[in-house]
Every structure is written in structure tokens, then in C-alpha cells.
Length: 286
Length: 281
Image (cartoon, rainbow over all chains, first blue to last red; front, side):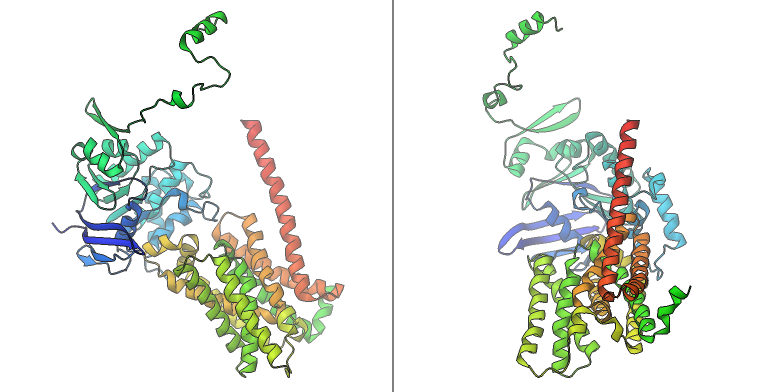
């Protein structure tokens, strides 16, 4: 099967400093991939290369077997980080989502019947059908994320690229979003996303790539998320816990306890456990 | 009724009013894109740059509209490219390029002291001197800009909202920016005779931000801003006739007064809505 995305020995640098070196990757149609790595590892740069915004200084990127050569990738839907969106811009949910139809050959400024049909379909699919007329600022974090996911989906993409979709939303919203992405992936959409949430990646994504300027490892989370690989990726002291068939990743705390730095969590209060108990007993607090 | 029709017996008022309505609407329309791109200062800067172009056109004996227009278009493109390709922010790029251009004009005026042409009209506007040819020029530019906005509506909207993402979705943002620069330069040239270099910036920005206060919808903002620009052009002309104050300044003062009124009303509305929400919570 021909890969959907191919990166052959790709390198990229801002000036003399190399951000990415010798990246060789293949994404096949139907894959659901998380790109993980510390801040500054080159995750967003790699996405921008795949999207065709940046041109590699070395190597080649092909989509559907066609080299990008500085052109934007065709049939790609992109969901940016929420923090990059101008929430005061005067657009409603429907207007923001319809931007995804900009490639359609429609001469008139108003949406065609097909655009309106797809808009209704996508909003319903993502459970935001009743928000079409609302301004994008007046939405919850999860709803805002869905709006930009809807904009990507209305473009009918082969590849969906998301930049840190779980950042800035609560755990439940992140969980729902990843569940939704898994459903979209089951419908045949290839998904590539960056994330800092290693536990969510371990629980929801079938394939992860560890990146720190180069590919450290890739594969299923079960095999990739090992202490050695994560230590090399994050250049830190990582902890991997397996329990009830689940995998949890945690950064090992520093040697000293927080009590060495902050001996008294609530200034003025008694912190010693025995004193605390007697203090509570004296006041009849259970 | 006589009160309304009386000024129209004068040709200068008929020409001036038509030009003011068209220029007001034109600046209101293009101003939406300028304000939403966070480049409000470009109107001020570019109008000064065009003044430099106007002087160069006079010295070189070129057609005023062509010379100043090309100069303004080149300055707008240079600002866009400087922002796009360097680490320099928009405000700094506007500051450098447009003041250098203005300085060129001033230097040429001081060098060629035998100037026969007064540039007062270009600086402060001279609505009484608007000829039918000027009205046609404003009408032509208004039509051109309206056509650009109509046929490139989706591309302009997406590029204004998020140029980088628009590029990913296949919008040729470089060309959209060229179109916008062309439309802006043309709008400034057309409005220069009416409002003057010193007041154009206000006519670009005030209707757009007033409209932004009134709506959260892009389509409505475009319509409202254009309407406010045209309406204040018309009312400003009447006011200037009866109060006997310079028409460009009257139009801009009227727009500013309307902005303050809308700001006060919408602030009260927001406060009332917040209070209502707290009482329900």
C-alpha cells in the first residue's frame, strides 16, 4: 500500500540551527498517530513541514506519492492550537466552519447548497448542531475545539492534522475529544496529532512517535513507552507504571520533597500530623 | 424639506456630497479588513506615503492618480513583505516605510521651491474643489473595491482571520495580500482629495470599530461599517455646510461622536447583561 505521507531523510533548521534531522517516516491511510516529545523538540515544525508551510532544507516530503515542493498539502484538514485563535474576531460558528470549504469552486461569497448541507452534517456529527449562529468566543473549550475540528472535517480531508488538541482543556473534554477522534479514524480518516499528554496517548492512540529533533522511537505505546525511550526523549527521569492493563507515565519527582522547600503548606497552621490531630480534637473537628 | 434640499442647488455641494458618501462607504468597507488585521495604523502611514508619491508624480509630470497610486501600492506591498519575511512587526514596518516616503515628498518640495501646485488639498482635503472627474474616480475605485470584496470574499475573510491556516487550506495568501494592498492604495488615493492625508486614517478605522462594537458577525460588520461610513459622509457634508466648518474634519468628528455614543451604549448593555447573569446565579 502506498503511504499517505512519506518523509525521506528530512532535515529542517531555522538559520544554522537544525531543529529536525534525518526524519524518515511513513503514514499509511487509516493510521492514528501521536507525535510526542518535549517542548522545543520540533513537533510543530514537523507538522508545518507536512502541511507544506515550511520547506525542508534537506530531504523530501510526499503526500499521495507527490512531492510537496513548498506547496500546501492537498486534502489536509488542520486544527490549530486553541491559543493561536483570535477569539474576538467577529465570526459565528457557521462562518468559521465554512472557511474549510474555501477550496470549493464557488464564485459567490455566500455558501452553496452543498456547503450548507455539509455544514449541517458536520455540526450534527460533532454534537454542536445548535451552536451554528453563536459567536466563537461564547463557547466552552470543548465546543471551541469541535468548531475547528468541524472546519477541518468539512474540507473532506484524507489526513487530519491536530496541533496539541488536548492542551488547555480539562481532562474530561480531552477524553471526549480523543474518543471522537478515534471514531473519525474508524471511519477511515488518517489522523496525526501532537500532544504532551502521554497518558492520554497511551490510552487512546494505537501508534506513537517519540521525537526530540530526531525520531527516538515509534510503535505501539505498549512497546514505545519504556523508561529508556522516554528518558532519551525527554532527557529526564521518567517513571512508567503498568496497572490493570493500563500504562501510566509520570516524571519522577526531584529527590527532595516539596516539604523541604515549603515546610508549611498553609502558613500559620500546624503542619505536624500529631499536633494537627490534637489540634483538631481540641476543637471537636472530625 | 427646503432645509434638506437647499445646499443641493450648488454644484460643489452635489459633487462633494456624492464624493463624500462614496469615499465614506469605501473607507468603511476596506477599513473592516484593516482593523481586523490589527493594522489600523497603516491607513495613517500609507496616506502619508501616498503624499510622497503625489509629489514625485508632480515632479516627474506623471498623472497624479497613476503616480501616487503606484507609489502607495508599492509602499503597501513593501510593508506586507517586510512583515512576512523579516522579524519586524507591522507597526515598525509601517513607521519606517511610510515616513521615509513622506520625507521624500517633503524633501522634493523643499528642493524644488518653484512649486506651482499647492499640496494643501492633499494634506487637509478640499471637498469644495471636487470635480465631476474626481467623483467618477471615487465611484470607479468604490466599484473596483466592492468587486474585489465580493469575488474574493471567502479568501479575504480566511486570510484576515488566520493567514497561516488559510494557506494550509489552499488560499493563495500572498495574492490576497496583494489584492488588499491594491484596494487600500486605491481607496486612499480616491479619498485623499475629499478627506486629506491627515484625516483618511480616521475614516478607515472609526466606522469599522463602531460596527465591531455593534455586531459579532463578519457579514453584518462589513455592511454596517460601509453604511456608517457613507451615512456619516452625507450627514457630515450637511453639518459642514450649515456650521461652516471644514467638511473632512466634520465627517471625522461625526464618526468619532457616533463611536463614543455606541461605545457608551454597548458598555451599559454589557454591564446590565453581566448584572442580570449574576442575579440569576
